[in-house]
Image (tube, rainbow, N blue to C red; front, side, top):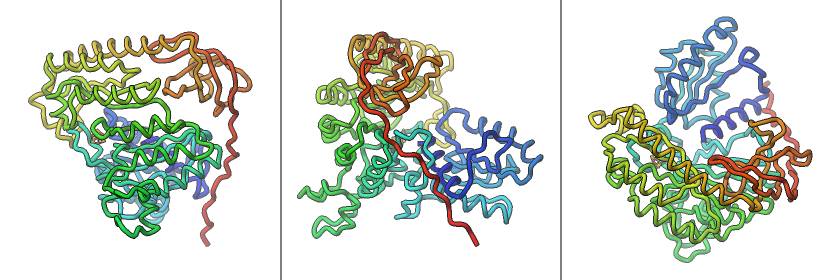
Length: 477
Ligand code: SF4
């Protein structure tokens, strides 16, 4: 989501007539888009700002802006610690970045942090702004921002605010527009995508629906005589997945407690929705899950995974795991190992707990786990996860996979990287016809725990995206 915000900031600057600079030394404007979910985000930000100080003193006309969730959290502190910063903006006013840069040219340093999005201000959603996409055949769409959950390790609710969904009709229009531009893969983004739309249906009329109601909640909801207050994520998958030209629909991240059978059904019956579910488990211990405020047990999680696997053929399931959460005992960790072994994940992002100031878990310091213990648990868990991933990948040797070509591989110049529908990275030998955005059939010939190797068998479709024409802002008088 943070990368997507960066695309939008770049798009806004380009729409205002700027062009990308080849290096920091040549830039007139440098925007640091921060994410405080990552460890050491503040050290990295102030380190980067320290490096830019010399540049700013040599060229005082250079403008430096800091946005994103660390800016939302630290506010005035940023300019206190780095006086050469011209603009600080938060997560709810990305759309004002250009205006604030201009204001600071005339008035000096500016800070604008909004507490929350002004109701109905859909420009505040990153997806509703101009965009500069790095790849032409793939697009991200923010369907919802903020989060109503209270996971005790997470800073998101306090820096991104409560859940707010974009209108259904607006998302459909945007996806159709992407398809017309030659985009074939869309990834839906949100902090908890499967609760998308619950806020939209809360305030709508149940009878005598207006066009506004239908635009907000979509025709599938409007045609359902019950018209309950409910999430609309299943409807959204079906509708976006039926748009002509969209071959792949992905989404991150769903919350296990909100993964309903309706969503699983939408995934299994909509051909373009990829067979991949990233479902963050975090821990397999019920007491740690409760301390994390996750709202499910290890067993409930496994039931959801099993339901999804039985409905969706060839589903890959990946996850996020945290070890060393405050109070985690050896028994808790054993429970995690058991659930992870039972779930047989295709891969997992594994983290050692680290405190995020401002979260409830950061206050549990009396229960912090010794670092060496956490590292040992982390390594045991990684070993288990890698073994499960390797088994899953080896099972695919000899199979034909539909892949979407991403581009040159970082592993070598004569290789290219592609992605399967199950979101697995696959490397294959370069062929002239395999441009970025091409769909091909590839036979899997080898596998490691984190990628597949294959040989081209057939090109299915070549990219059709049009050349991008920059959108220019109106010239001021
Ligand atoms: S669901 Fe939990 S972890 Fe995810 S964004 Fe919300 S509070 Fe954070």
